[in-house]
Length: 355
Ligand SMILES: Nc1nc2c(ncn2[C@@H]2O[C@H](COP(=O)(O)OP(=O)(O)OP(=O)(O)O)[C@@H](O)[C@H]2O)c(=O)[nH]1
Ligand SMILES: [Zn+2]
Image (cartoon, rainbow, N blue to C red; front, top):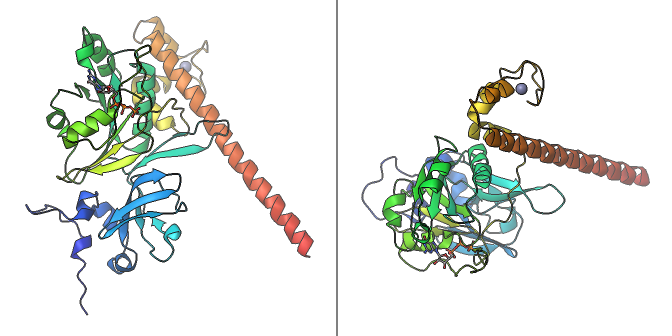
């Protein structure tokens, strides 16, 4: 019997035709190349389009269902769907993964989104705007291998957007900045270069900055819930409660996320180095490899500060992020090895009981 595998094989240059659901979901050669076509027949690929407490919502060809929690997956992940035992569905290798340190005392990592190509970092031209927070989001994106783009919303509510644009643009020359009225602007046109067929884009940012409004504008329809912000402190009301992937008719997968109150970094050393590439390069020229850039002799960073080459406030933010990342990373690895040691002890105790 000859089997038709064509549904699993995305074409390099898609002809002008109706896109298959898999293509619209973002199925690309990166994923199809990971498995032999035979396996795809028995365990067809599905994409996680939403994460709920009760499980994962997955979609694929002829599949639109909830599976119980089990696979260590997050929204945007591709799974090989095991119809008999859905919780055993295998997670495919990811193109990218955005993670942050979970809220709370244990310093576990929380998966935010998998397989994003572009992260729209949304902030509004008001009190929400904060360079340090943007730097965190950008470090996370760089670390994950995702292209960050800063979107400044609510230009219509502020007198002058120039200072916001200037500060946002100064963060990194590798991060484009777009000013966009989410209610009245040409959202589709301005975001078109990132929202292309086969791409996955996600909106990240605080509550109330307009993430869901931008998603709705992209779809020209009310696909995501929105709500007015609180008048007193211009904060949002956490209208979006779960992460949800929406599919445009053109074949772009669009992720809306709930506002994040806090993003702490863990294992983000190279992402931080990319945001502050000038400072990281300078640090390579310090006399001591473990220089803290305080008052050590031969510190190239302090020398650059003294000559006015670098900005003191930005330097402080770089140091702070680095310290936070190292401390969280160390604590996470310690917790992991503590867990390992504990499991070893339990195993040994059980073994000696049996003997
Ligand atoms: N004037 C103006 N209002 C905006 C703009 N963008 C969003 N809004 C309004 O801001 C409020 C909050 O927008 P949402 O899209 O719900 O914000 P969100 O970021 O999705 O918030 P959460 O779902 O809570 O994370 C809504 O009343 C929007 O209409 C904008 O560019 N200009
Ligand atoms: Zn130094």
